[in-house]
Image (cartoon, rainbow, N blue to C red; front, side, top):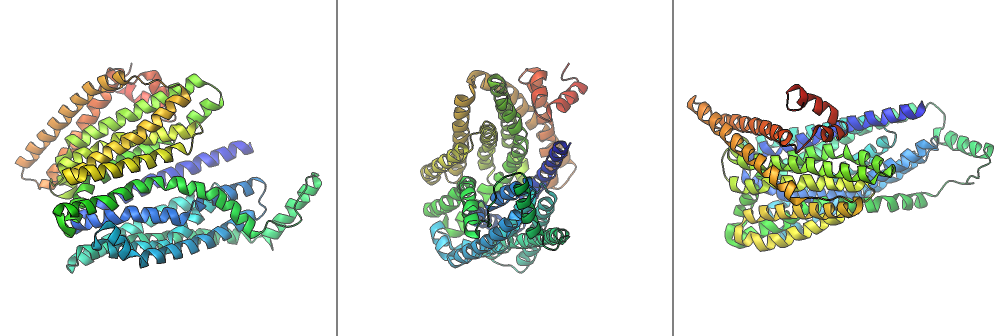
Length: 559
């Protein structure tokens, strides 16, 4: 009964955290649109140059400690709570605060040097304001890890939403003020990044509120840590188990925490490093090509227009991928190699089709999407190339999740590092020749490389066999039909609404929605009718398979 309750609590917590994460990422992705609309492409370029650096700084400052805190607290709770969880939290909080202050001060001081590395002095104010978030975010994230160790996901969920809302509110408020007084692009971008510090402060205040409530509840006993340790020792004596005469020293405990945390940190560094490649190469190469400092940032802003749209696809892929990890781990635990292979093949096929459909849809609708979101068609050709990072990203994400499901954890991070190296080399080769289009092509190639390396390892580990002809032939025909229908629907909506004299952005938004809806319907119908997805395969999908099968039967696409 106790196990059932724990499992239920875990599932409920996972659901709360997943919903909060999706909403938080959605807010974080969509906030880039008003940033470009109000600040312009130069501001957008500076922001997108500095933000990957901010992500890297944060990963280093966190040092994998939130995951370690969560693990150690959960272990302490599992043995009845000896007070070690609180010690872990206190030690880690001090370390996180020190890391944040030291790294923040270093980045703030070295901002001009970072500007020299990027070869663009306009990023210096934005780097400095981004560094202020290091005063708040590390401690806040560590506290989230503490509550997650108790399977209490509500504090994390509430603080995530609060952080993003405060961040966006401050960013938009400063955008309105700074553009109103005619501030320079670098000042406006710095104001936008100040939202990260404001969001971190708001999230930390929420976590401190939960911490205060937790400690108040813990004070039911005169000295909860002493009582817990005494009870633990008494229990050990009764059961004949040895116990330590004294508690583990703080230094020894900290060493154990760091031994767990540092590998987690190193694995986490791979993702922001890919973003950093563009920040440190594309503006420099554009400037060297004659764009000038301001022109390079405008071009880099245009280059980044398609990325938030693709991030919505990768966000969906990330959210869905967590469903497949336990399903694959369960099949492996049973020793059913055939089931492991089948679930792997099905998962890859789903994400391949999802990524292809998203990529083709974004590419076909690039012009109306660009007008609807960013007011003009500048960079639509580049957006069409960037669209195809959706399929590479989707495959990379699901293949990494599947590798984790079969117990291979470090390889996906190594493969991402290889992709980052390839992106660097391709940027150096292609950007001088093709400008931002070259950077987009390099991005597509890098994501496909990471996916290919993951899938090759999966094939060796699970016995998976992939038939390239079957994976390409049927989808190509279906996607061609989808593209024609989506394009025709968008053109028809544009013609009708333009004749009514509606504003251009509203017309473009309606055309995008019409094209996406028509294309999506054709894609789903084509996938089922062409037997790319059978009823049995749909039903095998964890959590969502049976409801989706029932829906398709209701609309008579399945019999």
